Length: 442
Image 1: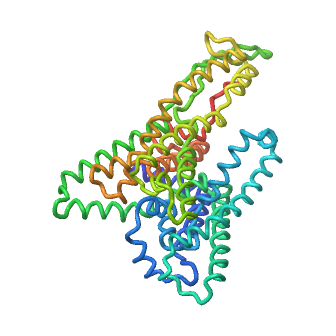
Image 2 (image 1 turned 180 degrees about the horizontal axis):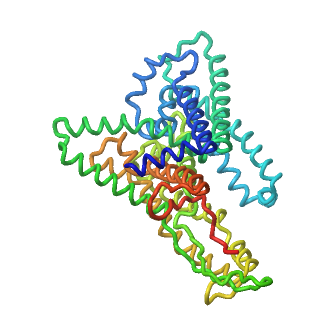
Image 3 (image 1 turned 45 degrees about the vertical axis):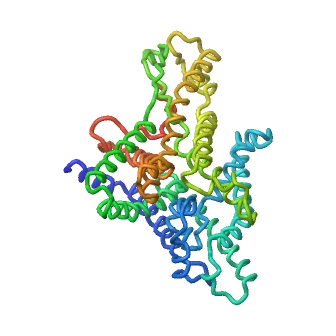
């Protein structure tokens, strides 16, 4: 405990780190305040009574927005339209050679970011009316001119999403951690205490199983969290030998290092993007009076179609993001340029092929485990756990919380170690996903 207090004092002593933490907390507070501001012309009391019986993916979307979705808040759409736009631009980077070329240049990346913002506006313009029609019950609308109210509400929801996107970018630039991921995580954490309290009350009530069943649930929950941490931090170390070279009277190199290939090199983004893709049929079904049966499958959080699609999407996006995050050819070229080689492997193409083969091997079990954790809430619901707490029992919510918290702690530890303070752990370091691909001895 004394060591923890000392570490907290050291964090507060570093002016830059202190300012970044305060800026991050301040911007997140603005986001949370905005999530409670209801759209003009909406009776929040009637809306709450009308939406209290809703469940399925509506409840899931409410978790990602910190309850703003079911409250008809100005931040009801959250950051998901921006994530959907990012997915489209990432896919265009694979399919369109021009976009792929632009991704390699700084000016091109800035232009792609601008296109992503424009695409976010287009998605919001189409998504906002669908949200208003399906979520805001007519009894909760107190407006004289419904058509004008629909237009103004669409404008408000679109501008609010752009404001949330701006908050995320400011957190990334001037705060601590990835702003978009932190905004999603804050929305998730906001619902955790209430969901856990409901689970406790349910277990303590008649026929709930009592304290023993509740303790078993908590132990299983902690084991799943430990498994997620192992998944996020797991690495495969590839030994790298650096050749000796003499410059004047000094000798450089001749040391052994390693390339830490991460089991989950893609981080938390496959989960977020897969969730956005799986929600598309839900939005499309809003255009039909009687949606097809296969679309209705995606409106139920525990349905086979939803969970199977989510699992496959997580696996595919894990491979996709690993491919764009780790470039074996670039790693091989960097090693060759710095006089490094993998023992028993020829430099150049053979090294790149060896790294690519190892990366494929470790990504497969990582992607499968990531997909299994993503669909765990469905099994938790089958086991009798309430849906609110089951969504934290595994799945997207837990993976995002674990991944984002580890990333943020890794950045804090980096600031401490740079200024020769002890890190957050007495032995070892937090293996954040933002660390360098490999250490290079000079």
